[in-house]
Every structure is written in C-alpha cells, then in structure tokens.
Length: 287
Length: 163
Ligand SMILES: Cc1cc2nc3c(=O)[nH]c(=O)nc-3n(C[C@H](O)[C@H](O)[C@H](O)COP(=O)(O)OP(=O)(O)OC[C@H]3O[C@@H](n4cnc5c(N)ncnc54)[C@H](O)[C@@H]3O)c2cc1C
Image 1 (cartoon, helix red, strand yellow):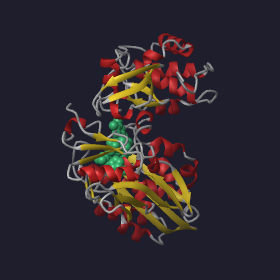
Image 2 (cartoon, rainbow over the protein chains, first blue to last red; image 1 turned 90 degrees about the horizontal axis):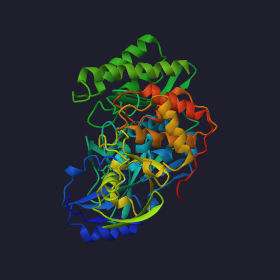
Image 3 (cartoon, rainbow over the protein chains, first blue to last red; image 1 turned 90 degrees about the vertical axis):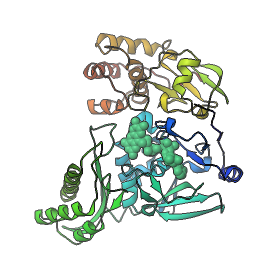
Image 4 (cartoon, rainbow over the protein chains, first blue to last red; image 1 turned 60 degrees about the vertical axis):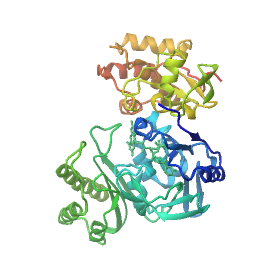
C-alpha cells in the first residue's frame, strides 16, 4: 500500500483548519474503521484520510433536558454499557446487542454506522422510529445544522452530507413516559455476528386494548431504512384482532421495496418482514 | 509515519503506513506470530488482541490509531498464572483441534474471566461472548466446556495487563 496522507485533529476547530488546507482534494473521514478497514484495498490512494476518532468533543453521552446527545465517535460498547442508554433508550440496547461481536463493538462507532448509510445498519431503524436528529458540522461554513435522521440517507451507502461535512451528534428525544413498548428484531444467516436480511424496529403506546400510536421502521428491505407510515396509520386506534394483524401484514408488504442479492431473495424478505410485524404485534398483545 | 507503542509490556517504535494493520505490525515487524490471521475481515477473531485493555480484532486496527497505545497479544499472556490454568482446561477438555483459532479463543476467554469473576454465566451468555470467534474444526462444545470449567474456578485475572 502506498503512502497515504493523513491527519488526526484533536478538536473540531483543528478539523476545520486542516480541511481548509486540503479542500480541493478528496477526503476520507475515518472513525473506528470497522467498515473502512475491511475495504481498505479499494480506497482511493489519492484521498486524504482525516481520522476524527481523537476528537474529544465527538465522544460521550449526555442528557440535556428532554433529549439525549450522543457524540458520533462514541463506540457501540460504550453505548451498551451506558446507564443513561439502558434506562432511557432500551430499543437501542436491544439493537446493539445483536451487532457484531465484543471485538468489533469496542471499535465501531455510532457515527460510523450512520455514516456508512447501509440499509442494513442496525442502529438506524431504532434511531428512525425514535425520530432522532443528526447534528452535522460543515467546515466550509463553520456552522452546524440539524436534520431529521430519515433525510440523511439518499440511497444504499449514500448520504445527503456535503463534502467535508461530518456527523457530530446524534440527538434522541426522550419520551419514556409516553411509550411503554419497544421492539427490535433482525433476521440474518445466524443468531450472532450476522448481517441483517430484514429487520424491524417499533415503539408504541397503547390504551387498554387499543393501539394509540405505533412507529415502525424496516431495515434491509428498501434502498434506505424507512418508516412504515401506511402501516402505522392503519394500526392507529385499532384493537389487535387476528384480522387486523393480517391486514397490517399485507399493508407492510406493499410499503417495502426489497431486492434479491447475495444475502437473500426478494420473496423471502417480504415474507420475513410480514412475520416480523406479526411477531412485534403479538409481543404487544402479550405485554 | 513513526509510531511509539507498548507491546506486551515493552516500549517499541515502528515505521508504518497509516492504514497498515496492527496484525501485520505484530507478526511481520515484531515477530509475534502467536496472533493469527484467519479471515482478515473481523469475523473470525483469530487475530484478537487487547488494545488499551479492550478486546479488538488486530486486522481492523490501523497503524494510525496505535500512537501511545498498550497492546497485549497471546504471546504476552504466557507468563501469567491464569494462562497456565486456561491452557490446562483447554487441553483437558479437548478444546484444541487444529489450534489455529485457539489464540483468539484464549484471548476472549481471558476477557470473559476478567469481566465475570464471581458471576455465574449460562451457556447462552458464554456463546454470546464468543460471537466474534469462529472455530472451523467446529469444536465449540469442547471449548464451551473448558470455559464453563474455568468460570467455576474463581481465577484471578487483572483488570489491566502490563501497566
Ligand atoms: C465482522 C463485522 C461485523 C459487523 N456487524 C454489524 C452488524 O451486526 N450490524 C451493523 O449495522 N453493522 C455491522 N458491521 C459494520 C460496522 O461495524 C458498523 O457499521 C460500524 O458502526 C461502523 O463504525 P466505524 O466507526 O467502524 O466506521 P468507519 O469504518 O470508520 O466508517 C464507516 C463510514 O462512515 C463514515 N463516517 C464515519 N464517521 C463519520 C462521521 N462522524 N460523520 C460522517 N461520516 C462518518 C466513513 O467515512 C465511512 O464511510 C460489522 C462489521 C464487521 C467488520
């Protein structure tokens, strides 16, 4: 491997200064490297690597009012061990527990999982149902902007980030008292260390026997992680009878756009998404 | 670039490219060949080492992340008393077949013993802890038996190595 140019800023301000000096070159933002190192031979040798993993401002988990702010370079294991996340965002814990291994979770960051923009990114479906906001820093304007996570993705491995922009924070609204049910499940080749063929995240609030509201997002069955708004709308105010569940399964099947690839087939992905919804709604009844 | 780090308690200085892998630095530059390369993609765990006291895949750690880091490999574990007990339990339970994955399994075993001393773990929790280690001889039952035995022995593993 040829010599690649690289920088490791310690602050966001340092990042901005480095960027100004090389803005004409192609840039590779590097965090934990668990995605990038696997494909390191395909990386452009002309790209300048900027390793953001040493920027202290991008680390840590803090509660601010009714929101949790997570620094983008926080690792998956740091999230898993955080009492704040365990208490306030259990759906994220459920998702991270299914991700990779101890070895990978010690290195992989949440910002990297989002920045990688995979439709199979396992932190993304929970963050989408939680209506998470993403804070982005632009070295060109020296300003931050905040956008809803669902507008970050423009296709598989593609984001709406402009050149040089980095994800700085993941901002999750807390409405712990508002919902009492959360669900995450992914289906892969095996139980552990597996890439998602299809996944479903849900949060819901019920009153007596009826669903007051439910928020659903599917992974790996559309070009980007997607909210299932038609299914959500249909389930609103409904009692979960077998007929309602069957109808909801049909609606969700029409909301997803799966493909056949090396990991699974289109037909199987439709089938397991319907079954995941049934599993989720059954868990909601039993609750 | 020049990198200063500590490996198995010794300060070393190596010349490397930013994206060179820790695995290659260990094996080719430092001669520490106990650490193995299996898949090279973070799936199999044969290259598992401790970096700043955390379990990582050395095939996915780039040289540029190694400045002032503390690395402990399987070769650095041999002199600890707990290593002899692990080695004995693996032998007695037939947990080593071809042996290629063993260094990685032993590193994860050390991590498990360190984190779960005095805790009783079920087979499911043991299996989950080894999600990042693959054995192609598929001797998992025997490995889990060895680990279960070790967990009952109240073995003391330090929180930090070589510090
Ligand atoms: C063996 C193995 C198992 C895995 N299992 C899973 C799994 O179960 N589920 C899952 O979802 N993923 C899995 N992954 C993928 C990977 O570990 C995760 O996507 C991880 O969270 C990536 O984080 P990172 O810090 O390592 O990213 P990096 O490799 O550093 O970066 C990934 C991408 O994000 C960009 N990026 C990183 N940080 C930022 C930022 N702050 N702002 C903007 N862009 C940024 C980078 O430019 C790059 O394009 C697995 C990977 C391996 C090797």
